[in-house]
Image 1 (cartoon, rainbow, N blue to C red):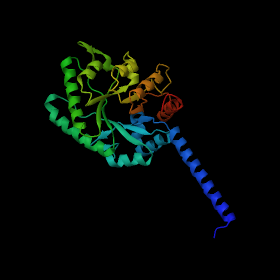
Image 2 (spheres, one colour):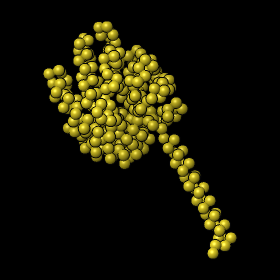
Image 3 (tube, rainbow, N blue to C red):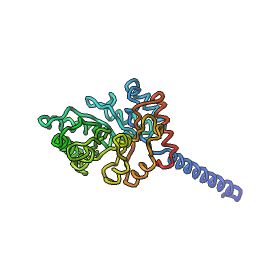
Length: 289
């Protein structure tokens, strides 16, 4: 029979265990909240990824990034690894591969079927890798509206292929898309001539600024077209003073932002240091979730 002393002793252990469990739970919750959802476009560390992909991915994880966007796909492999292998490596490091930049073969109307076959295979591989977004990183700038319309039709066709899966197809801008062609701005014409159900736009906020426009204005005009952003600056994020990221993030969150990726193309420091400084800037920013 349990006496009073044993009862009190057992009760104390139960209470202590409950308090410990509660403390651990709170600590875990705080830790999860402390780690912001900041992604990285791996082009930022392109040379390091060529030299040592696994070691570089470990470094990226240690910095604190949670999601990745790839920038290397060739012969059915991502950074030289089978898609399922790359997915496992990233997952084991506590990150997710959520997007990929892929160029594809040179496109022309007479090679449409061949191009579609390439994109079907690319979709299959990236589904295996677990991505949610496939992004065309650039295109030759058209001189006439008919040429631009050809590209828009091409993107709609790719979007038709991906629409049956969980992957969405999108286009990534530079500043040259803000040049004028015939009766309008190329970027505006692309938005108007692509199907919102099939094609999204990964807005590179820095290149919009360099093109002479404001990212927030486009997000307000087309609130459903930019589920993904590239966060960029002259070099490290926040270093130039030219970019006001606060309204960009606030507007993007209001519009239902799905993901964003830091991209550092030029550096004041070693690329890893520049990426670390960019992460630290966004981690300290109260407007970044």
